[in-house]
Length: 532
Image 1 (cartoon, rainbow, N blue to C red):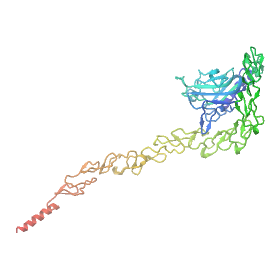
Image 2 (cartoon, rainbow, N blue to C red):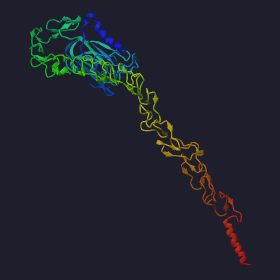
Image 3 (cartoon, rainbow, N blue to C red):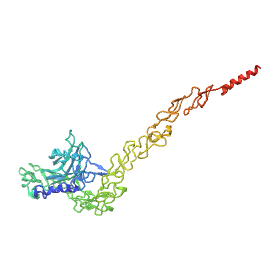
Image 4 (cartoon, rainbow, N blue to C red):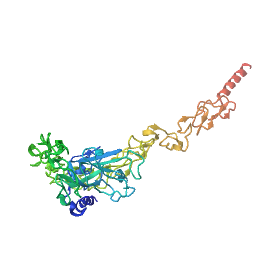
């Protein structure tokens, strides 16, 4: 699918309006870009320049080829063409996940309602509104979006917002840039239009890119008919001829001086890249005439080489690594980080796939670069965190170890074992053990589901029978003649009241059968002999 998207933009530039656009160039390629915020993931920053680097074979959000911002109420991105250029159309390639778009595709809701402005300053309000989406839905927004935009300007500005509720159906609550590529096609030199950008505008004028109608004076001319000359390197006041501002590469009151001190471009505000041996770059376009220092590439030597194999230098023009990538990186320029492949294996250095699958804690088909969603863990996130975790279903994405330990009644690192050995509660720290017939207590609250052993009562069977009671649930009452009975069996451990006998003191004494009777007998016997 990404390769189809690439063809779409190119086909528009080649075929639209027949042959008169054959020479339209991508004026935005490798030009300075800016966005209102930058999203990062796993140490990778998805910066604004990724939308003008010419690379968009991987349209996934995490593919490393798209400029992406944080979700906010406004999102803005712009590219500086370096000077006022004659623009024909803009091709916008958004990031995407689903090949087929429909109303359930939440990602397209991030883009709905976007606008494109052309301006001579960084302020969109001072420019012209080229396009505003008012009709697209989640299912109908195309990718890429091709916008005819026949204006002159230096900055192309992409803007979206969610600042005024209610939003149309399908719109997201927040907006993102998520631009994989923005191509701005037009004529690279003012003063030409039409087929191959080869038809000169009326003398000393710049004109409409397809119709040739006059729009303003070219640099170096002024006056009512643009017939008077001023410095060739400046845009002149149309009546007085004084320089208003210089064309790229020049500076000074009359725009005669070339940019110096390692600068170039409009107002000499751009810094040169890492040209070979410290040579100055070209004062107009920033190119390095003798190539780049080691570790840099591109026409302006502003881009850094990726993680090429064995530290080899990358190609000085396109940044490709001729010997492939070091472990942990992939792609033509070896700038994209591998996901977390199984057992630490390296990913394929061409497409980034993990041949052995994903390691624990990540997923995403063969790329293994998205952390497991909350509540899952393990290889390819195929395991569910235990509902018995202290925070239900929240655990370490790699091991499944419960965050904050277990809920009451459970143990082990993944909280899949009930408390045992007559324990219960948080971390199984509390003891139980007086349940009926030796049954274990409930692992969570310590209760005895089938009642208590004799001699105790209560939900947890942890309260001894009060004095005078015994047996299961302490339902039985000790005998009235008992000095104090055993709470388990009811046996009178401390003996009976006088006149009673038996284990429970429930048998009346017969004469002589207890100590009291014997005392009485002895006294009577003694008195008998005294009176003889």
